[in-house]
Length: 135
Image (cartoon, rainbow, N blue to C red):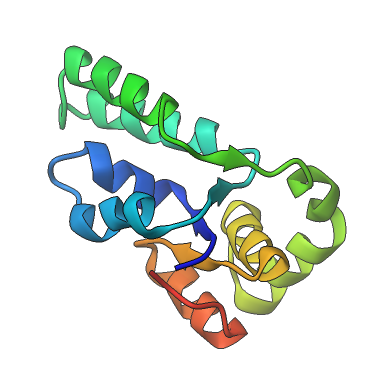
C-alpha cells in the first residue's frame, strides 16, 4: 500500500472503544509508506475525543490517554490544505455535497494519489465516485 490519507473518523476508531473499524484503521499504519492528513485533522480528532468525554463515552483519564496516543502517531500534516481550500476543496465540497472539512480529505487524497481511510459514509461515497481508493 502506498500513501494513505487518514480522516478523523478513522483516527477516532483507534481510541474510542465503541467505534467500529479499529482493525482496518490500525492496518493503515502497518502497511502504508506514509500516512498524511490535512491541517485541521488534529483539531478534529481532539474535538472528537473531548466530545466523547463530555458525553460520558470515555473518562477524563481515557481522553488524556487517547489524546497522547493520537499525538504520537506517525501522521504527516499537509502544508497545502489551506491554500487549496478556496478553490479545489470548495469545488469538491459542492460537487459531492460534503463539508469543507471532509472535502479537504478528498482533495488531499486526489492530489497525492493516495488511498483514503475513513468511516464516514458520505466521504466514502464521494471517494468512490471520484475514483479514490478506500482502505
